[in-house]
Image (cartoon, rainbow, N blue to C red; front, side):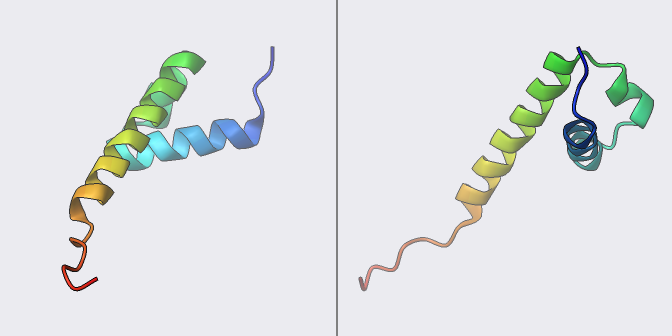
Length: 60
């Protein structure tokens, strides 16, 4: 089974950007494991974004 190169590049870049892991370390992961890390990063980013959002205005 082959893996779409664009998707692979996207996952690798995402994990490397956030975790600062080497290309070899990321490529050594099984696809499912790499995808799981990418999903966890997404959840972390969502929580951070939600907690840093300004509070709703009491005037509305």
